[in-house]
Amino acid sequence: MRFNASGNGPQNNGPQNNGPQNNGPQNNGPKINDPEIVAELEALYPQYETALVTNDADTLTRMFWTSPHAMRFGLAENLYGIGEIAAFRKGRSPANLARTVRGDWTS
Image (tube, rainbow, N blue to C red; front, side):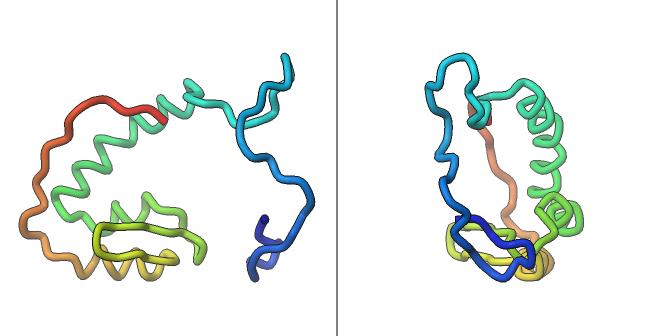
């Protein structure tokens, strides 16, 4: 399913790309660990982490897709649309936000 151009919900647009496939030399599926994407995420991650532990709601909200289709799944809440995400961030208590991040990650 894909969303139609008006954003009014899913429509069936025929066959879908269901991820990487072994189609020989011309694989048109998503690139796993694309170096450009990995570099972009690694550059953004420290900014996101700092904003998270300092409760910088404006920066955290800007880092989400500005769309009613944006989703954030948390430990105790699921948020749908940039409006709900922004309201959650602005209403979140700044207490006890420090955390320790372990290990490396890739996309």
